[in-house]
Length: 190
Image (cartoon, rainbow, N blue to C red; front, side):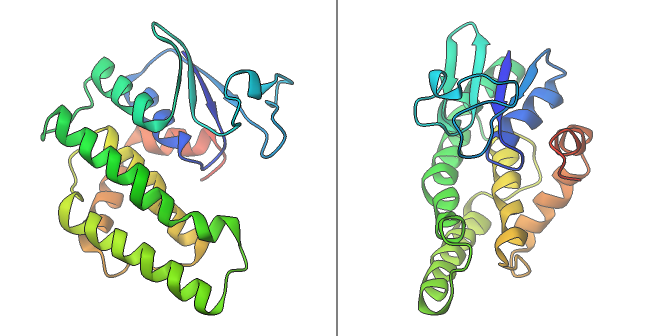
C-alpha cells in the first residue's frame, strides 16, 4: 500500500493504523498547495482535489477520503473496536462532518479574531462537547486514531481541551501507543 500524506493532517490517522497493523506500506508526502509530491509526482493525478489522504495500491485501487480509507483499514486489520463496525462508522461520520469541519475556520484564517474567532470557538466547543459525551473513550479503533489527530489541532489553533476529561484520557491512551509515536516521528511531529 501507498499512503499519500501531509504531516499532521488527517492522513495521520491512516498512518497510525498502518503502523499499528505492522503493514507493509510506503509513505509519499504531498507538498502543501502545489499539487506535487516530494518525489516530484503529480498528486492531482491521484486526487484531483489535491487533499490527503489517499491510499494507493490496495485491492480496490486508490481509495480517497477518511470515510472510505479508515473503515477499509479497520476491516482489513481488525481495528473496528468494541462497539462494532456500524458504531465505528457513525463515529467516523461525526468526526468527518462535524469535528474535522469545526477546525476549518482556524486553518482558513490563521489570524481569525474578534467575533469571527468567538463564533468559530463556540462551534468547535459544541462539537468537542458532543464528542466528549457520545464517543470519547480509551478503546482503540480507527475512529479513535482519527479523533486523536483532529484534537491534536487544538494546540495549533489555540483552543484548550482542558474541560474535556474523556477526550484527554483518550488522547493520553493513544499517545502511549508505539504506533502513534512512530507515525508522529516519521512525519516530523515529535
